[in-house]
Image (tube, rainbow, N blue to C red; front, side, top):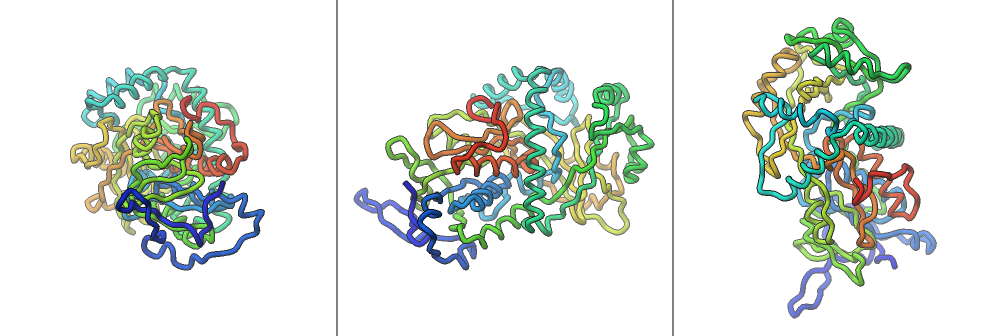
Amino acid sequence: MHGPSVCQRRLREPHRGGLWGLRPLSLAGDWGAGLACRSTKAETQRMQQEVVVIGGGIVGVTTAWALLEAGHRVTLVERAPVLASGASHANGGQLSYRYVSPLADEGVPLKALKWLLDPDGPLRFRLEADPHQWGWMASFLGKCRAQVNRVTTQRLLALGAFSQRTFAAWGDAGLLDDVHLRSPGKLVIYRHAAEFARVRAKLAAGGPERALDAAECIALEPALSQNTLPLAGGIFTEGEAVADCQRVCQRLGQRLREHPGFQGLLHDEVLGFELEQGRARGVRLRSGVIGGDAFVISAGLNSRELAQGLGMSLPLYPLKGYSLTAPIGAEHLAPEVSVTDFEKKILYARIGQELRIAAMVDLVGSDERINPRRIASLQRWVAATFPHAADHTRARAWAGLRPATPSGAPIVGATPTPGVWLNVGHGALGFTFSFATAAITAALVSGRESPLPLDGLTWPTA
């Protein structure tokens, strides 16, 4: 059974006496401008579904577009006033299709202890009276094994390669213009010779990565001549890209508005689902209830609460990250290549005329506040690595919560509740993987097979 046409779609709100009244669907801003009721052939209409996508970050927006292109009619619900208000707002901007190894790995627990003792370390942990934190940490530690890491990495490499192809196809179609997209490659630099030698020895012959000594790193990226810290060498991967994630969301938002199947953006909070004989038939908003045939949860950390209302316990926990965005002037020497400091887990990416510096994993619950000490630490490392790359005195600070699974793999696919689908848990690689998981979700909602194997990427196996 399919929902009403665009002409008939209504938002229901509670009516006194326990009955339901009807009022027209309210479209925020000019999102509904130009949308007209269009007649469709009966065969096409039977194939279409009314789909509600929950979440207006990069994962939700890409999913909405993929569903539209698959022939469905889509409504996007985002509780914030604008798109990309959460983890998609000022993240690292790197599209790291091959640098996808999850955090859970052999030796990480011992490294974590060292990081925790370092006030400028990449990891910070605060024990919370939160069962989600305890359960997530226990599962994470259980996955800190080399074999588990290898299997997950292979899955994520396949996901990354598919996402790269999907991103390129969308770009070729003119969807992603004016998003500061570049493909300068990615250089991971190492401060300690022993660590660099260990990684260098594992490189596959003839693979896409190549090892560079310190002099070769500087020759590749002259901005590293500013560096005042030890530099043992680096691993360079061609083809890795950078772009402005927020601008991608905004650009796709414009294209959504122009699509005839898009029914609008609702700036509202989803409180739960309406079920009929065990199947989801609507979502409850603060302003009422909106019906549909299918519902995709892509709401970041809020996905956990929404799924809990359906009896599911999603293994999501926020990895809090920070960034600085500093303007680049004519007098600055900014890196052109995307650079990641392996030991400190700091990345540097030129996005348009700004330098984005992003780093850190804080396991401190759902606290979105900017920690001045963490920002000061980040500024110290920037000053030691790229002191003249941008106007650091004018840098804008940001913090965001990146919902991650213990394994590091996202969760995509069906839930035990018919009509509800998941596209969640991308962690720090939401920008990288979102195009792939959007295409996978659209295929599954449409009743087709996933374009990639979903082993280890579905609930509850992820």
